[in-house]
Image 1: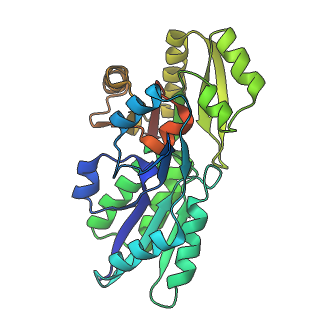
Image 2 (image 1 turned 45 degrees about the vertical axis):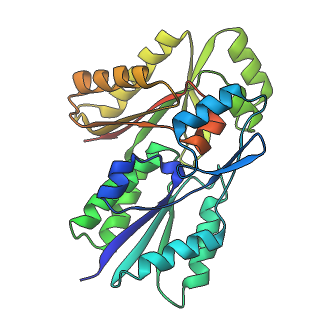
Image 3 (image 1 turned 135 degrees about the horizontal axis):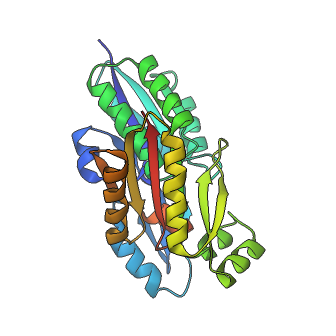
Length: 284
């Protein structure tokens, strides 16, 4: 029986122990800072990146993997024999990573088949999908079953995040300059999400951080409805204590036992900035 091999990119921000346990292949993006280029999660880890970013006098930039990077990963995975390759990636609205994966797919299509999916998500919102699909693959689920699970999770999950400053999103072209200026002057904390098209958009605007956090948990309650939550995770940019507190609230208020806490890696962190905290939930 054929098995499904899951491939993703480093922006999924999956904890290393889960990558290893579930045998997920990860293609790294690149981050550029102060004249140096690093492979995300390989040459530089999140903690080191945020330290360097705060010491730097410039913002970091990022770049996608080349199609050849994906070809090499696909060929290595295909060598396992009798495998269906399922490649799940960062929203195409944020990066050309998905396009690179599609090009790579076309370069190997005479050798073997690759299914490439645009997650329309970022960071551990991708990661949660990849982890659950990799678990299903280990249980012997077919490619069609795994693809159906990906699509269901993309449609049903809720993603909510707050940034410490709008500067990084504004300079990266994710929001307008006026929005960033008004937000910082009035201490307005936008609660952001990711649209069906995979783009960042403001769900709500609240004055003050504590009120913004309260609003995030209201939104989670609305998403959970009467059925509650099946899965939840917190991901953060250099805010471990705050992330742990959010995770504890999720455990207490929604009875979710296994709440994953993970760091937002260098590539996503370069665009949202230190101090960002986010939650992804999947209704039961």
